[in-house]
Image 1 (tube, one colour):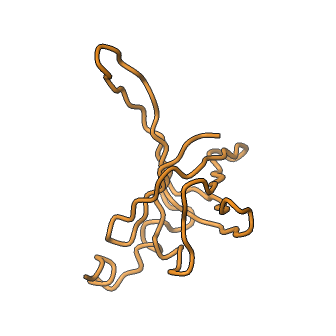
Image 2 (image 1 turned 45 degrees about the vertical axis):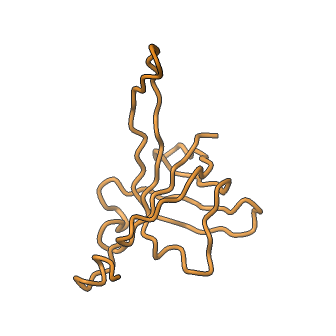
Length: 116
């Protein structure tokens, strides 16, 4: 099955994750062994959520980083426990641990994160 990018003939990574694009941040990806280092650009989201568990409401955030799947060739496997250091402001880098990887089937992968 072809991705949307293949159908319309566009590199979605270049379109949606362009350097200096709106909401696009730089990040450094490192696998859990510490050996594989990769620079990425993507969209970081740390939205606020309220979850009701029984009778108790819990406030939380759900950090995620959307990145073009083409940043990860077939030989490169993103795994739980890998780290991502995101430049969240010009002077602040924040480290996150990858909790899950969710390819959307259209050329974008969502890395679900946990702050470290």
